Figure 1 (cartoon, rainbow, N blue to C red):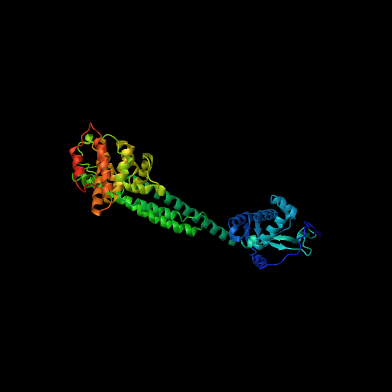
Figure 2: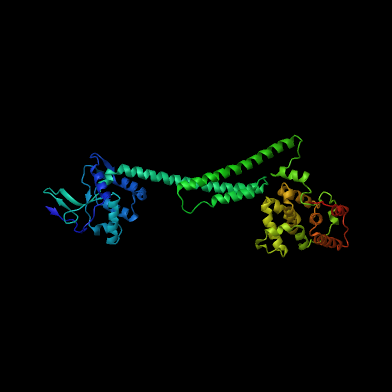
Amino acid sequence: METNIATTPFGRRSMTLGMISSQVTARAVPKDAIVHKWHVFQDIKDARIALGATDRALAILDALLSFHPDTALYGDSELVVWPSNEQLIRRANGMPPTTLRRHLAVLVECGLIIRRDSPNGKRFARKGQGGEIEQAYGFDISPIVARAEEFKNLAEAVRSEKKAFRLVKERLTICRRDIVKMIEAGIEEGVPANWGRVQQAYQAIVGQIPRTAPRQTLEAIAEELEGLWAEVREALESFVKTQKVDANESQNGRHIQNSKPDSKIESQSRSGNKDEAGANVTDTDNVRSLPKRELPLGIVLDACPNMLWLVKGGGGIRNWREFLAAAEVARPSMGVSPSAWEEARTAMGEQQAAITIAAIYQRQDQINSAGGYLRSLTDRAKVGKFSVWPMVMALLRAKLDASKTTGTGAEAAAVDLEMAGKVVRTESRLEISNALRRSLDKPGRGS
């Protein structure tokens, strides 16, 4: 007795080496083998890319497996299913017949199923006298049993690779976050280090991360970042240890205790570097006798021409707003922390603090710690013992002396200094203090 279950013709098809290999593998399946078809199907889904299967092809394989009535597949049982194309399309959630045929070919090429064609190319099952199937033509799913162990190993390798990829992505994320936070902390706390170089190194490494990259590439970048992380961490830890040593020594009377994190830097600035920016601040014992009016922008720029380097496009500084913007650029480049800058602006006023930054920037090559020096001047400003006038005057005097030495620009420098002197003399009700006179009269002072 012959029952024609499906009559969809396949037409003529070519035989490939992949198909022959699949058939050989299927014939080698142990007779006592038994697998759970949906467990194997999950392994196939996980290893889909390694097997070369498509999403549509797996949807068809899912449908084919559903036509086998048993969940457990045995190596010694008949594993051929013979659904029609219409039945497959319905169970595969609908797709054009051409798409169905294309992805069935993918399943065959990947060795996931084997075609068992009838002489006329149709799919059907021939039953015997007792109703048992004697011969079936359609799709043989025996590779699911024969290659189950292979699919499992492939799936585990894919899962391990995904896990390793996820871990290296987490390493990159955590490392990037920690480095950014440590750089901010180092600048904020005044830790002595070339933070500009550290930021450049960080950006250079991060710039290597592509949108899509293999795990090996990301691991190499992660190792570079971790090396930078260790370098920054060591700098911060060394600074913390130094602060603890200083704190212990101060308790023994050898140092004056300072609760600020950058006390070591600031103590150096306040003791040995008070004249670093060109200002005779120590001698300004009567700041109230200095002019109360603001310094003209032109005089400040003549005294601090290096600020012009910070202007984009080299367009110059035309007003105080642009001057303040340039100071905002100069501040982090010198390693001045945001807290030191905010404290200076509160104590001196925004414009006076910007002039102070400009003066420090002009002589930064002679200053060990710009942040510590700014804090020292801020402390003096809080008690009314600081003015930007002596700093600017001293810088102009240094410019004049340098011009005399080189023999160039002496006349222009003299005009700048004379102009500043006229501004001072216009304050008729105020008298220049002896300290300021000594500052202006001392040749070469303030460099």
